[in-house]
Image (cartoon, rainbow over all chains, first blue to last red; front, top):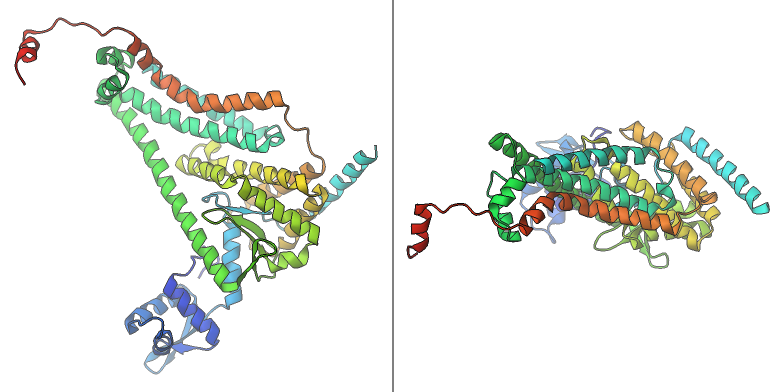
Length: 132
Length: 335
């Protein structure tokens, strides 16, 4: 997963699998995942395998050989995934649908200094005005 | 043809004026919402003018003219004469291509806008499931994230979203001012104007005025939300909250692809601070009326120009041509 590429939110099954792996906090075989999803979702082994393979290809899962099968674990914690997702929402600038309005624009450290300075100057001027 | 040319010239003049407005936009900020409306009206007027220019050029040579003559009750020959185009089929074809391209691009842009809205909604739903909770006392959704951020999402359900980091960072009054700012966005339905700007920007991104439109409209609407929040909260509180959140985010956030927009965004934030603390005189009622009139004119102008010849043709009597023997026979013959 390259840094520049924008995250796509997970699909429903993808999310369910990621949730499972995050909750488990351990690696799982496809067989285990099928079994653990079982009560709510009776899914075919191949379906789950395909989705997990996709998640691995997209960089969300890492995997190791375990005999003839793959053992998968989450590449990223739930918290950092959520952080990335939110930053994507905030970063995507004006060329969007316009449904989302941020409180502040992103700025870098130098700009932050300039901003703090601008605040000081404006506050001083404002108080000067108020006195007069 | 003259009508088509007039519409094209009209569009070109608007685009040039629009560029000027982007450059000297201090006065737009004195009535930010009205300013945003004016820019949007100009952009959509350009799109309408280009679309209608194509249609009027194509009118005489195609079935459009008979449709219009039925609609207006005007004589078709007069109508065709009013819109007569030298160059015949080639020019008519070019006209239809122009109109078709504009319509197709607006359609395509709408699809994209709808698609990115759906993605956004899905993203927010995922976020809520991953680390969110609804805080009834704040009427907001709180995401458990250390970095400060606040935003709102309009749609079927309007939502204000805050991170737990924001709540830790800000004082009570600052938080209230931030919430008021976000609610002002939702209450004033800023997302509609933003969507209109996003559509125009995506429909004709080749034109600088159109390309810059979403950013300009967004900037003005931020100012408008600041104004509304400053009605019920101390502007100094809001200004310090803006600086606190922006500073805490600086360096945290990954630098996005286009640094040009970032540099501009910084200037925008400084403008917001200065404007909150040293508010400019708001636009006088008379000037406001003028701007509103301009918005109305921009809305009507393209259609007015396009239909003037047709309206003139409709008031004139039909052209009488000597009836040929064949037409006489076919008129008498039973159907």
